[in-house]
Image (cartoon, rainbow, N blue to C red):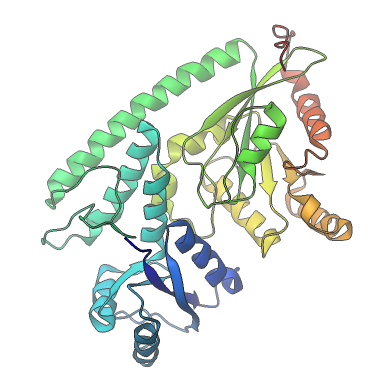
Length: 376
């Protein structure tokens, strides 16, 4: 089966801080979902049309472009109402999806653990529930394709009551997993083991940095949302034997829907309870400074806005030193935190970062931990 051909529609409503980066990010999202982009356009709107989101004149022009591109699917870089999706699909004579459904599709692809699959299923159900109109709908239709992937089930009852019961059942399972993590967390506190959590915009190199600072066998992928579940690895101070648990988290993205944040609360809560956050920034990404702002906003939403942060400027081997210095200065003003420039891939300044982590965490250790393993 060949890759799906998609036409991308970026939206500039004037209020989005990273509107110029809208199409680039949407293109990367669709590529991650396994699609081939056949065309794209950025539309500027002054007000939202209740029937089509964009104006009828824009819709007519867009219909011609979609037909010429021979696309199988049109993806809008915004949230569409169920009525808007249906109206646009009928007019274009191809399926239309919004940004959130595309993100959910990618989440469904990358969910590997049982908890990750539950989180994705919860998010899908919460997305589908308000869209039910008493007609049959399938969570995963046969034939596959973007917008049809799910966490493993082939059909889903459309009755609202059954879906709500399913949501409650999943939440109960996730709550049990959360209680288990809380027990582990209490044990770490008793043993005086500090915790550090990596946060940052998706594809900023968090997993590669985790590998670099812990010598762990976890390599990152050059994809959006390659990490969904929480990955935990140990990092040791060779001088004192003190141990730190380092956690990786799901990558953030601009305008991440609130219900997705809620669905992945179990993953993101590591940031809330962590002793220190490493905010990883990729300076090679467009609008890197504004993406750093988006991460800070999401940290505030999940209750981690007051956490101590070391900002890590990653991939600095790919930019000029003066460019890194300029961005570093801006980030310091934005966050008020220490900023350390590194390259996880080339292992540049990783020892400096590790030293800074242990220096910050040293007051938390009332006594040294067991000697670090000889292989570390």
